[in-house]
Image 1 (spheres, protein in one colour):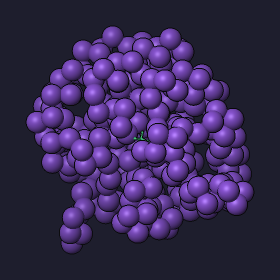
Image 2 (cartoon, rainbow, N blue to C red):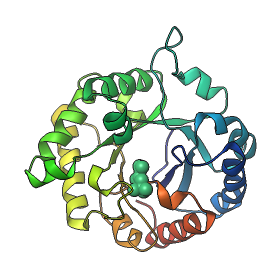
Image 3 (cartoon, rainbow, N blue to C red):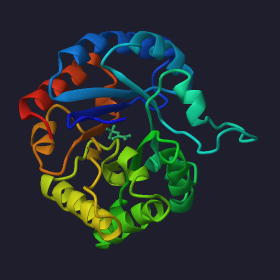
Image 4 (cartoon, rainbow, N blue to C red):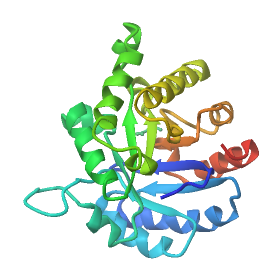
Length: 256
Ligand code: PEP
């Protein structure tokens, strides 16, 4: 799914909104999405909320996706959901490799990359999350960690598959912590990601989102950074008021 050069504000609703609450929030976001010229709002509800949210977003400018997906077309994969199942409800993207999947559920670089590669090969948009822990940053390992996580994917895909890819730089220490990365740290990490891409492919680097404690108080300077195409937003995506503020900031900053 092309984001057409617009800033992507992707809400990751995690395991936080019931189907009823997700539907109510989507109902408020639909008219807001319609007003935006330089930005797109994407939402990733829990699987159980997807059907209700799908009914609300159909035909609107609000884009619907999932928090995870498995690459196989069908089969004995208990607990997993395929691209076809998501498409049935109008989903257009899925998040893969979120640090909560990697750390809590033990998804390795290899597994996250295999998932994402298989999904990209089906022409489905993937937001592929990568990022270092606090310990890794302290030990100056950020570049190596980003390279290991992204390289695992880039060696499994073709340049054409990469046209459906969005990378999200999400430092683990910034997720849900209230500690946002400094603009310099974000700029450096995004340049590192672009350089890793260039080592493998000659085409332009995919859009890169920043994620980690984004709020209306810190977003204005982040969205103005050159290599930032938008944000993956957890806590601040759970209310309409907060999303409205973020959308206004994004609109003032203009297209990425
Ligand atoms: C996330 O979970 O991807 C995230 C960025 O969360 P938060 O905005 O709450 O830090």
